[in-house]
Image (cartoon, rainbow, N blue to C red; front, side):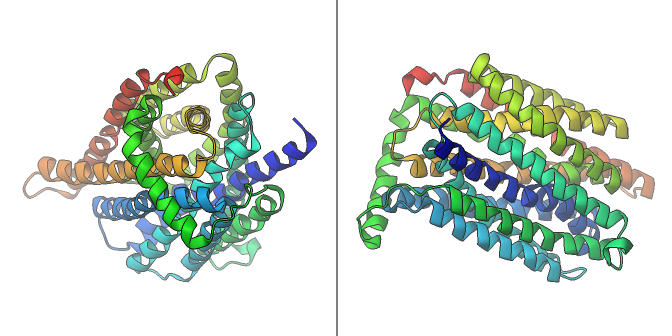
Length: 434
């Protein structure tokens, strides 16, 4: 790797280090716990699960509708980095605003969370689209894995500090654990915004277009419509996007809903936080190993391995009853989560035409966000339906708790079919058909 390219790769990968603080501390860790115990004070566990699922789905739907058009415009106007900066710092502002939300204000909490997710996910469209400009066919799997790997490490380090703040608020000058959680949202905003500066300084923008902005917007819209109408005739990319739509839904749903599920079946928040930290620090080396595995063993085989592992994880998750089982599941998730994300991104980058990475990664992120609409709603609806079916008339308190736990297990089990459908569709994707 040339020195200049190496610096741009580090700048690109460090954005994952920066924004993973939001994914870990906010999306996967503290927001689900704080939302259920603080902002949704007084609601039952299945209702709060449904509200959280709805909030995730609203954010995903908004991004899904925006992503391809934004990507097409960014290709025409050469503004990928500018768009990344805009969405990233909008997400930073919304994350910091969570600090201001008081107990019981679940509507305001959901609003800031949804806007933060939109900023986080919107910036990722353009972050992904910059991958071809900092890598080549020989190292794209490694570079993609390097980004996710640094993300796990950076997100895990800040999350570990945030956990210490909640366990021991006094030495940090905080009144109690609730104040520590709220302050953690501010630390995420500072971490995300601060480390994004390396991406701004070190990653070059594509060669600037001479088109006026209005022409770039009109051309981007036309380009989006042309690609959308022709995508179904691009067999490899079309089939891959369908497969990705399903299996990444399972991955994203587990990321966003695992803590909520653990709380719903009776695990303590401290146990769940420890499990999340395990995922982060196991994911750091495991994602690098998956990048190497994709180069040596083959990307397709490695993705199939990860899908099969997630199916086993989902089945096991519906039956677990002990804390040690949750820890073991965290180990297995850490081994494959970054791998399936990184290799999916690098595999797709091989299927897209040069000069249209923004637009095609817009479609890639669009389907990922549409899939994330299905998963959380599926869990919420299945959980509520199972609660209604299983709840006996004049149930005792013990029976209500038992039914709530069983309904949550039914909900998480519904994710299994998404991995199965995704794996079957991916079988028919052939890279030589690109």
